[in-house]
Length: 482
Image (cartoon, rainbow, N blue to C red; front, side, top):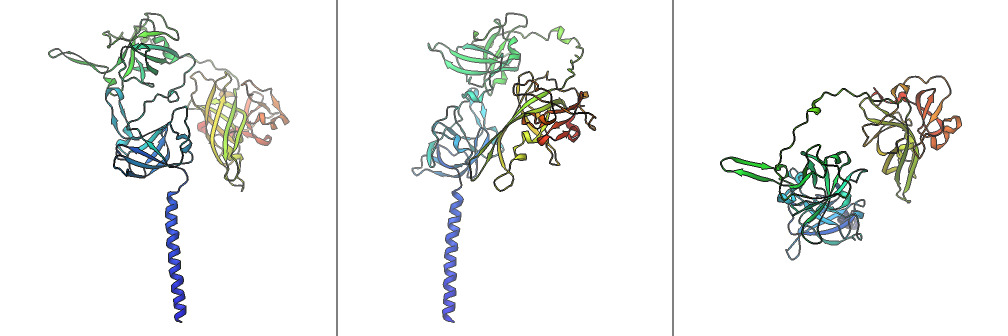
């Protein structure tokens, strides 16, 4: 009996030791999460705490594991872990900084204001020319202030017809790439580049003026760097001009309407050292004339567009599979004025058609939807609706739609029963041109997926996979034309 008790006690002790060892290993493994572990040194922690986010381009890609003091007491060290999706963006030329509320005066403006109502966090920026990737355990010197947004990819892309010109300023008062260019208090462009002239006699600033505003720039326009300026006298009163530049300086200009001629790309102008003294012209009388509402010309036709869908199916036990499909869709304006494209869900939704190795739902990422209009413009699209009953119909909404976009005439759309007669298909090819009218077996060709199914001049459905016709009656009321 004593031996049995001794054996039970021994087994209990061994089980307790093994359990404790297992718990210690488990707790240690919590710190061994997948990702890239880095150490970043700062002069001050600035309120950074364990658990704070690490962000890249505003997206959380990691977290702060610990904040401690360096062994010699000279620095604060942040131990961070970047998620696998964010680790490739951290390179040897990346800049890390702690985001806190900052006011840098007239030159640098204010930043980090979102941390007024939340804790500090870490952010990093990597130039468009990536350096070598960082390795686990790298020790980096953090920046004590945010970097200037000098990367070209942080600016809006140049558009066709935008004006590029050079402004020569006696001194740069905090202008940087991304600073606004303003006319009559409205932003009309931005600063693209700031550099000191080779002779050192002035600063050269490259400006972009948006195409729709380039008529405001003439050879008679006057430019200056806007910054708060106080004028007046003690007894007559003081006037503060350009007070809107209190946080961030910008380029301002003005030219009286009707004076001067329009300038070409590459135009060079010298800025005034101070804001010029002039009176802004009042609103012209002809602008007060009551305009008769213009009647838009309606094209009584069916508008088919070409759709390209790309995505990646993530696989755990095999290489990731790229997905790329092309087909057609039917474009019209819904009752809210949105540009809607109705098409087959099997064309624009990888999760609808793909499964994983075990027959479950596939992991679809990096989806991109592009729509080619008949006029050659390519617009991004978002998938906003799919048939809740599991059918093959989907609806997209276009982004960045031009104001003169014309869609299918509502009278050509049939939301009731299908008209009697043989159905024909109307689609768009990869060049945006209409495909030859398809009928019968041709509808099973992948090129016709998402094409409009017509009887006579009425569209009653969309071509789905395996030749099925998806009726427009499935669309909800808010996605239909008025």
